[in-house]
Image 1 (tube, rainbow, N blue to C red):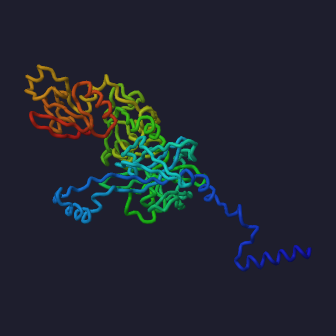
Image 2: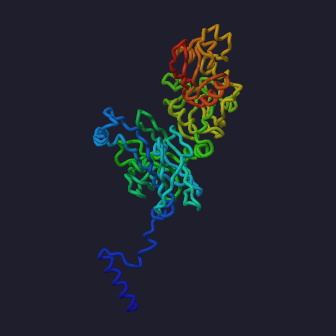
Image 3: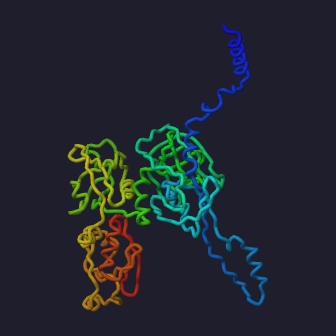
Length: 457
């Protein structure tokens, strides 16, 4: 062996034996896939600081001639006279400054400030938010293009694969954590007993401040939006799948809200008693009980008695699960269903759309169980109405949703969800908007009294 090569070999063996890493091993070998992902995506992760004005408590001892009591009150209740601040994260998804985050990060905010990794600060404005999916889009304006991460996909995720979360937990900016996907399609119960469905579960903690930050795979693809909705979680986190976000981001940017559509299909839970009839070995799916003529469901060929087993290859467990999944598909989206009919499985596709105005009357009668008409002079006399604002109920179908809740002929509908009803045109527009929801809230006036009722079509 060459003398110099022998000496180098001996030195290398001694170095490794002592536990040291030789200088020539540094550099590229340490730039792991995780490091590369952080270098690539990190600049697109932002810190979100919001302010919410909290109504100050009024001083009951206020005396304009003696300010002593005002000073005493402010010292005693300092928090009730300050703005409330909160921290969160977001990820820039477009070079023009569009940022995707959680709805609960920016809800009720009167001011939104965004800080980039290079410490530049921007005032942001809310573009659109959706409380049902807990997603929101805000925007900052910059003279130059901003670093961004393109939306990836989450339909091919694997339990056990490595994931990377970047965010600002407890205000610690650009904190990176890694872990694996622990489970998919996870349902959890959040605040106010609300159930959140179809989450990615990971073994990296997601704490306050992480909410709204990106979840990335080992290739740097954006696969989810981290969310801290489960306060009792220890050592686990949850993220909204990016495929769910992709379906609604366009609506949030274009319209400021999600335009939830209508399928014209009514379903019920599968019961144990039905298993033998449908030749199933376990309770799964939902049973179609009604399909409205001219609806997307009818055009797709759905029939009464069909069993909807899955949406986009995701198994449907019950009616709530079905409704939750359908609600993530705005108007214009196509949903692929797998159904069971006469013992055979079939695939059908239907396109989500708005309820046509010409079908509002039939929808109201068939789904809600009553008829309405505009209030004319004859209606005022016939039903002894105290107002001509709204629409009057002229008939109720016994046993229908409206009939069971107690709606009667002569009742006046003054409000549908949040929309005030002044005439028949307002009612039709409100019903077009309401047709894609699980329930409809009505303000009903009977005589001098008004009361709210909730109908589930």
